[in-house]
Length: 609
Image (cartoon, rainbow, N blue to C red; front, side, top):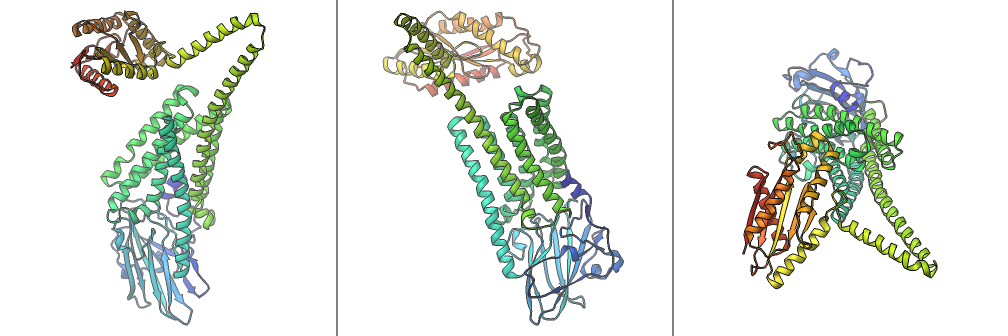
C-alpha cells in the first residue's frame, strides 16, 4: 500500500517545496559518488509541449526543489523536467556517469547544456525503446558526461510515463572508476541473490520430482516467479534476453507479478492446509483473491501498464490480508508450527519492503543496505519458507520413525513373554501385520484397493496375457458432475457418495480374481479376469452402471437428477497382440472420455485383437 501511495502521490514524504534558481553542484576530484536528487529542481509540463530551450527558459518560480535522493513524479500523464547545474572546479576535464538508478523509466531525454543554452551532449532512452538506444551497456538508464575544465553545464532531463505511472528514480553521479566498481559490486550482490533463489528453486523441483508432493511443486513455482520478477524488474532480462522487445518486457513484468501473487496464494493454501485447518470462509476468501490475480495482467496486453500495477497492488493487498489472517488464526488458535514459519517469513519480507519503500519515499537514508532490502527480505523469506517445508517433511518422518520404534519395542516385549503367550501374541501380531498390509493396498475412504495395488495387478494381468494369450478386461469409470455435487452438498457428502458407489460396484463382482480400485479422486477401475465373449462382459459392466443408478442418490446439479457414472471398457481378446499396461490404461481412459463427451451416464467399450 505504501508502494501504491508513493506511485499515486507525487513527492510523497518529501519536504516542503522550495522555489528559485537551480542549485549549482561543485565537482571536485574527491567525489567518486554524488547523489543529485537533493540538488535537483523539477517542473511539470502538463501538455508535454516544451522542448529543452523552452524548458530552460521557464521562470525560476515554476521550478520546485526536490530535496530527496529519490524523485517520484507520482501518477501523472504530464511530462516532467528536472534540472541541475554542474560546475567543474578542477583544473582539467572530468568524466562522469549519470545513473538514474531505474531500469523501468518509460521515456527520458537528457540534455547537457552550456550556459548559453547550446547542447553539449544528449541522449534519449527508456524501457519503451530498444536497449541499444542507451548510452551505457548497463541494466539501469545511464549516460556518460564530459565536462570541460572550469566550465559549468546544466543537466536538463525530460521524463514521461507511457500511461501515467511514473517510476521512482535516484539520479547519482559517479566517476567512471566508481561506476565500474558500483556495477561490479551490484552484479555480485544480485548474482548471489539470484543464485540463492535458483538453488532453492532447483532443490524444490528435485524434491517435487522425487516425492510428487504438491507443496514442493507450488513452492518451486513461487520461487521461480520471484526469480523471474527480480530479473525483469531490475532490468537484467531486458539487457540480456530480449533487448529489442521493449513492449514484451513491460508485458512480461505484469504477467510475472500476477503469477507471483497466484503462486504465493496456492503455496500457502497447500502448505497451511487451509481447506481443513481454517474456517471454510477464510479458505474460500484466499482462493478467490488468489484466482483474481489471473485477471490483473490482462490490461497489460491492452498497453495499460498502470492499470495492471494498480490492480495487482489492490487485489494483492486484499489477498495478503486474507493470508495473514489465516496465519494469525493458525498461530494463535492452533499453535501451528507451519503457521509460525509462514508468519516469520511474511514478517521478514514485510519489514524489508516497508523499510525499502520508506527509503524510496525519503524517510530512510539511501545506502547499499536500504537499496537492496527487497532482495534481502525476499531471500530471507524464501529460506524461511524452505525451512518450514523441510521441517514439515521431517515431522512426518519423525512420526513414522516413532511409530516404527514403538512397533519394534512391542515386538521385543512379546519375545520376552512366557511361552504360553507366544503363540497367542504371535497370532495377534500376524493379524496386525495383515491389517497393515491391507491398509497399504486399500483406499482409506472407500475400502476398495488403491492406485498402488491397481498398478501392480494391471501389470500382472498384462504380463499374463502376453505369456499365455489369456483374455482380460479393464473398465475405468468416473462420477459424473462430482465437483458440482461437492460444491452443492459439501465434501463430507461427496465422500459418502464415493463409499456407496464403491460398495455397489464391489457387490456386483462374481469372481475372487475380479477387483475394484479407486485410482483417483472420483475415478474407479475394474479389472476382470474373463473367459466369456465380449458381449457378456459388456452386459456385466452395464449391470454395474445400473447398480450405481439404482442407488438413487439425489444430485440437483446433474441433468439426470441422481448421481451417475461414465465408463470406458477395454477388452483384450485371447490370442491378441501383446499390449503394455500403459496402452491398456490409455485406451480405457480415452473411451471414458468419449463416454463423457457423448453425454455421460453410459458405457463405451472397445475390443482389442
